[in-house]
Length: 114
Length: 118
Image (cartoon, rainbow over the protein chains, first blue to last red):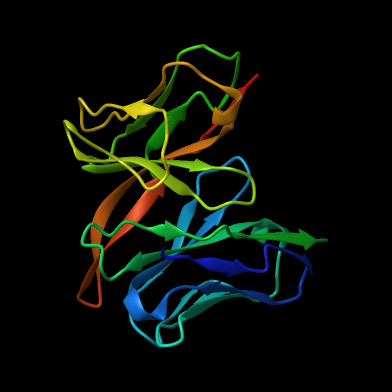
């Protein structure tokens, strides 16, 4: 069974502080990793897709790193703002799946306190 | 912004009723998916389709059924709703992408239907 673990489950951060959270996946069977942001009452939207060990992606104040050898990815948010409040989902595509089906973590719910 | 739509957004219905959750996309994607998600839990794939007249069951067993008669439309039906079907249902479609020469997919989601069966 392929599991994707995200931690912490929820996180309260003061506005202006930086934060990070983790996605863990099976390192022995990796193909790609996705990060999504899901704001309340909206559709999940793609943030990053990463495929190579050592990948680092950045979009504004949000960045992500990937370590396929040890099976984890970090998502960093610099200088948190209220609009960053959302659930951040990661999803893993195993190398054995030629259909590229995503296996999802339960998400990290981020709440920014003004 | 992705052009994928779901209706209704919220539905409260009594046990035993037949319901259909609608999902449409205007991007011409062949691949479409239905996920079920309970609070604090992972998205679980319950159905997927790789094109017209193609439907498959996902990893999570579900009493729902789907159809794919047109590329843009992928409705989900529950013949007899039960309280155990109370959940959030997300529809998605995907397209192939290539990153640094590596093929993969990117998924686009609808806003979800929050179903409550009383």
